[in-house]
Image (cartoon, rainbow over all chains, first blue to last red; front, side):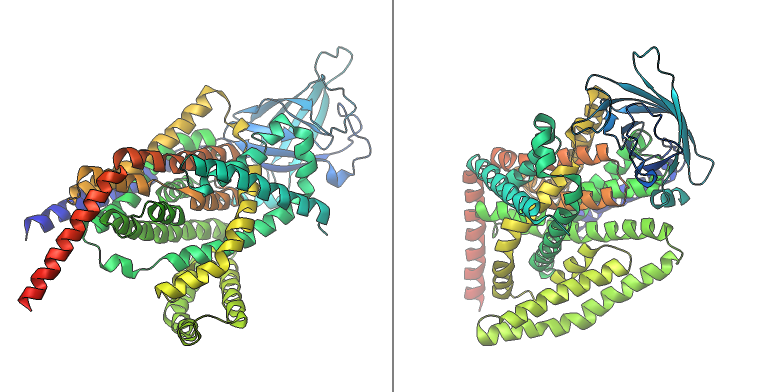
Amino acid sequence: MATTTRKFAVSYVMLVGLPILGLLGVLRQGRNLSAPVGMDGNWVIQGNLDGLPCALPDVAPEDAVLKISQSGQKFELSLPNGLKTQESGTLDGTNLKARLVPAFQTKSSCDRNQTVTLVATLNKDVRPRTLEGSMVVDGCTSCAPVPFTAVRQKAVAKKEAH
Amino acid sequence: MPNLFTLVLQIAVVLAVCRAVGALFHKIHQPRVVGEMFAGILLGPSLLGWVAPQVSAYLFPASSLGFLSALSQVGVIVFMFLVGLGINPKELKHEGHAAVLASHVSITAPFMLAALLSLYLYPRLSDDSVKFSHFALFMGAAMSITAFPVLARILTERDLLQSRLGTVAIACAVVDDVTGWCILAYIVVLIRAADQASSIWITLGGILAFALVMIYGVQRLLQGFESSFRKHGGLSENMMAFMLLLVLVSSLCTEWLGIHLLFGSFLMGAIMPKEPRFVRYVLDRFETFTVTLLLPLFFAFTGLRTNIGLVKGSQMWIYCGLIIFVAVAGKLGGSTLAAWLSGMPIREAAGLGTLMNTRGLIELVILDIGLDIKIISPALFSMMVIMALVTTFMTTPVLELICPDRLLRTSIASQRDVAIEALDLNGSAA
């Protein structure tokens, strides 16, 4: 075998063969990893909407959707009345917390400087997944936390089958 | 029904901003496409939506984005056909060890490093609806891709297409693109099959059968286009319409088979006749409209989905830095090492590595698919878009630094001398 060909063969094994073996090892190792619980998508808020902070009483029940865009343990959340996360919300296990502010073009009854804190727990053992929690207007001593329940919409819930 | 006023206004604004920023980037010796990619980001929530939310909400209301998306996807379908058309597998046959090793390493090295990085990123930027293997394979495919069209444009602008560096780079990019798209197709099939009742083997069998029919059946029929071109010196409007129809049918087939529209258009381009004058003729007919009007819409749509604001805090920027580092180390480092070990001078090898590190528009197309099938999160999507911008932007200045024009000219001249000497020797022997 010529020196050039031998050098090529050795280089090929080192630079192509070994990384492929390494990739297989990584894929095997990664099986044991766990990622944060998935909650990305639309969640339909159940029950009466009138009582929610900064509520929009004329939202039709099918439009009462809480939208979550998730990136690992951080998420962006928005409500149909224009409230949305100012800073990313955080997910700790199955507990999520977010501070919401009225966005531009808000239809909410809250004023611009008002913030709402949302805390909820995700139930991952039911299909579709559900969120149970409460919202409260920050700094409002007379306002009681308003409980809510939201159910994940089916189209997104299909991915949970993985 | 779309609001036509809003849609036309959007197209006008996107076109104006993309042309302006593209021209600005051209002035600083960057390919225009880099400026247009950047313009898309400027029009999205990262800048316009942040500094002028009222203007952003008026220009790009959420209800109008579906139409903008559909138009931009039509543009990408035609663009992927043109990318496939530009790829000529015969270019690989003339290349030696350097091209074989460099092309394979420029896939395996970034792929392996991306998979390794996935071990760190998966628990931090993904969620349990995505399998680790899918996440790692997608990251690998996304990091190992090379923007064949941008690379070809840079080589043309620097008059390097016929140099050794140019031919090896083109050959490597062909291998990278074809391999990258095959891996991506496999990942899309895996993910979509998980949501369907039918077996993955039926899907894979269908795709394989389709590819075989295209390569061994349809490809022969396509020679008719080239024959007609040779006979008449061009193609009639009916022939061009028929060609476009074939692209659309092929796209629909791959979508129906469970991969993606874009694979069909890419494959149709790849099996088209490769006679250079025919390829140039078809490119000229489709390119202007696609590149000047439809692709900027795709950049704008991608920009609207990119929110650099999601990359918040030092931790997120560290993730982003790691992604850029791994992308550059794998692609630039891997290709350089492989080319150097194959006997290329170190500067030329580093030039090849730099060219292979160009990800450009192809990367955005892949990332869009990843976000659509929810294999990457919005924050990771934004980080990967930043990586695509950085790696594409750095190509020209780094190439100029490593391989200045004067050095390459000398190299090309010496290669020509060697070729002439060889011809002389052959002539004497004859």
